[in-house]
Length: 264
Image (cartoon, rainbow, N blue to C red; front, side, top):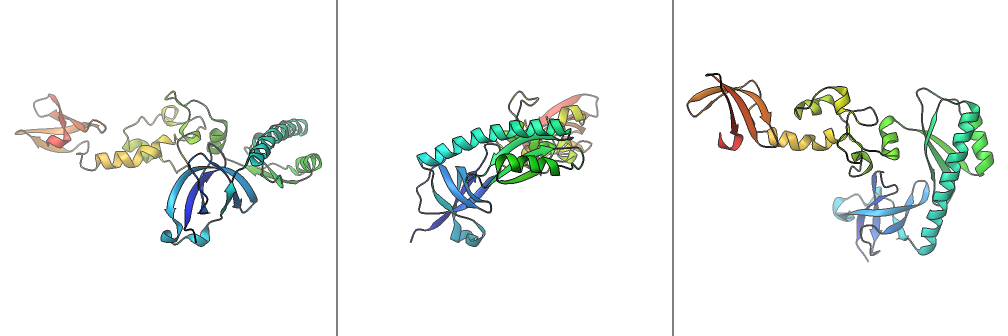
């Protein structure tokens, strides 16, 4: 009997990673697979392996990988993507005609076309009952309208961050972690909202991504305001250069002195 392993699968390039049981199917990273989900069969891409499922004691908590995607599965997925574009165009037109205060961000067809999910943003609650009727009449399947937040919208739409690279939430980050102002303070960043906010208007995801590293690097670094003795001279720490591993001190004689923390 083949040992079951957990395999990380993404359904969208910018989406979360979900783990599924794989019982002996030879898979590599970037392989396309058909998996079993709560919504039925879905088409995904292998992004990571996670070792033995039995060793983690979580076998019963995961659905299974059904098979590696065949040519006909790839054709079905391509057809679904065409249907998604048509469905989004139709929904946007209906939203405009009905004057609904909402913005359609994305559309997702389930692999077996048993349901269509429309993702939207809105400032307040929206009465979209008539819109649902329009969509059901047009697509003859189950319809779900799912409201998302600003961060999820930016992840789907993508774009360039102030660093000049594509936003992290749509590329390297699998999950959207909580971000706080404290993280910006620990990284000695300006608290100007324009400088620490992303395209979504919320705090930048990279603040959370780098936070633990900064905490680790600052663990043995003297805090600003602390007086320390260096080479028979006393000074007050006024700046930290965390990535360089250096601190700058204002010495009692009025001079500034930069020293490596490793040399203290």
